[in-house]
Image 1: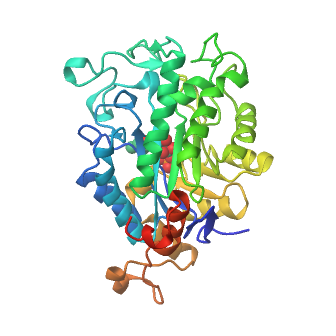
Image 2: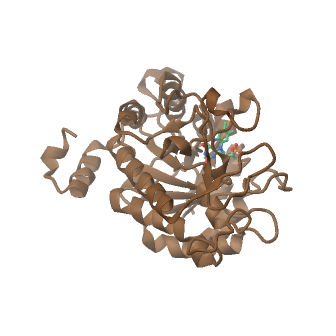
Length: 387
Ligand SMILES: Cc1cc2nc3c(=O)[nH]c(=O)nc-3n(C[C@H](O)[C@H](O)[C@H](O)COP(=O)(O)O)c2cc1C
């Protein structure tokens, strides 16, 4: 079994180790644009040695944002500031990924440090939020308008358009966000989906919107690059979405080109009791990996290097995603490598502080990427060099 600092290949992309920066909203954009904060925040985690740096939940439409300050990729103008970040991350030998999202009924809310609940239109919120059914998440949240079938098709197209832009920005990994009570999770769970049409009711119907998003995204996302899916593996409440349905969903989606399941949980039922503790969601990554043979990512209260190494060594997951621990310490991967006795590459600029024998970083292999790009766009490899 590999360890935390062994490489991991998915399609034509090789991760230098198994540590992934979990997507984390920074609530710091104006009109959805990435800015200096995101460049430094994400760039630091690449310098710190993570193998994959995932950009936060990025809205596929303006009304898909959780807060007015969320990241967006609903127009071509959003590409360039993200491309600058992807370029820097790749120079550090990390792979740049991005999570695409639609907040559904949890949209147009305040960023966490400015209170809770709905942001009114006068303060930059939007007039209506949308969801599978007109059911509010909790008191203080808006009652959403139920999406029509045409609206659903627009959302599907918006995911595909944003995926095309993510490719243009130079990202090598794309993640679809179908967790935490946001739109795609809302379709999956009977608690938030009470539709009577072909998008609600049976398992087949509740999973349809997500299947359509995956199919549309896979059309435009290059074959050589991996597609991740984040799901809430359980609602933690009887009668809702659960691990059995998650396993079945993964069996359906893997043949459609989903390469890794990022196994989170919860977020669709307020005040539900979650037995949070070290690695509390890892069991779900293990079960899905074991029962479907599809690679998984474990996330949730993974903080100690030995704990993360153990998850990989024992085959519970293929990668670990860290969120808060990487906010505390962006250099966690370099520290973990030292503690566990693995070799890790360091930025050349920092080599004088590195453990003896450490190698300088190599950027992510451009030649391979140019070949992928050329293949995807049907152009000669030479022409791909300028893209
Ligand atoms: C500041 C912050 C922002 C987050 N934003 C996102 C997000 O954009 N997308 C997402 O799927 N999860 C988001 N999460 C959840 C994390 O990715 C992660 O799943 C969760 O924090 C558990 O991991 P941890 O125990 O390592 O923090 C966020 C978490 C934090 C702390």
